[in-house]
Length: 462
Image 1 (cartoon, helix red, strand yellow):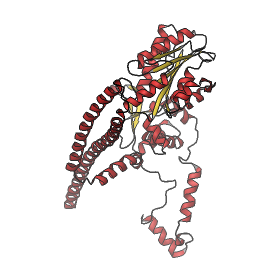
Image 2: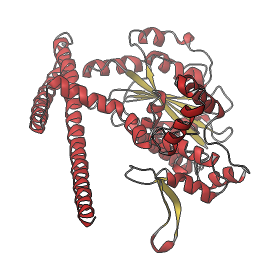
Image 3: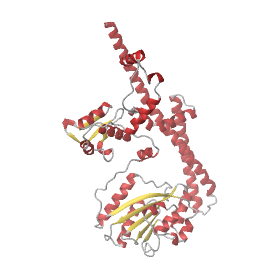
Image 4: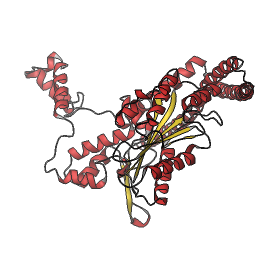
């Protein structure tokens, strides 16, 4: 059984040689210590430490030499002008105790690295033998020596790494985890939660929690959500029960599966939570209700606190005629439409600032700005391609000094390309949102005209 993981490393490159020449700086540590290593040299030296690899008998460099791996990593970054940000990636492959020998573990690690990254990246593979189980470390350069592109470890890439590791383990007759449990969130949802911004899935979970608190049966639970505008899908064509039922909040484009909302929100979990309750509860916390009551009491007008006689009778009739509306018994909740807008607030803010800064007021101006940006992007890409050819030629000729102004110019081009691509993305999102708003406005006007014609007809009949 092999467990895999990979994470990025950030830091500075000026300490690489010092760490590489001083292997005594690497000390024993656990997984947390590995994740805290912040320089290429530190990571490389830790992975190839003499004591952990039995005097480096199980260290292999792919597209690089073991002794000069850190220097080669740095040279590749300088060649392509990408020396900042994430300087390398640290991978991990651990085997079950007493399942493999050190030679087999290292052989599997080299094959895995060669298959995944050997065609584009420099990789150092080291097998550690100092714990109760053998495990491989992979130090991967963050910049490709082949095309200068950054290493990008998406969820699909990590899944491919895990699948390749499992396949190699099967070839060597090593056990694998057949169905690993993946409970990770999407990056967008995680980022929104980190920034304390609402998410649509989080809103659905809050509404489900409130409905469970106010219900004692599944029917009451469904009715509570239906009263908020939710739709449900339990059966498919022909009335056949769906394997994965779903629900759709008001204003959403599609249905959300219950089993994808997180732990405790599948239909089985919801039913268990309902059957565990025997009394109907208030859907909002007691502390929140008390805060609302105190605030309402503090803001109550003086004449409404102690009234009697004719004034009390007058207020009574005002309540009966709905001139004065009584306060609700529980705290008002923000509608799901407003909560969805809050989740998109940062994007709407960026679009609004862009339109104001560029002075764009019409659709024609927006299209013209987008076309101008695309044209500039094409010209900069051609210039950068020519610069890359000149830089490679000068490096081959040994003239590293001559590459300095070219590399600086390329860095400026990369920064400008980033700005232009962001502007193009904003233009596309603004155009898309404008089209949706126009359709909604036309639909609203049409509904208003139909309502006016119906009222005129009723007036004539009266």
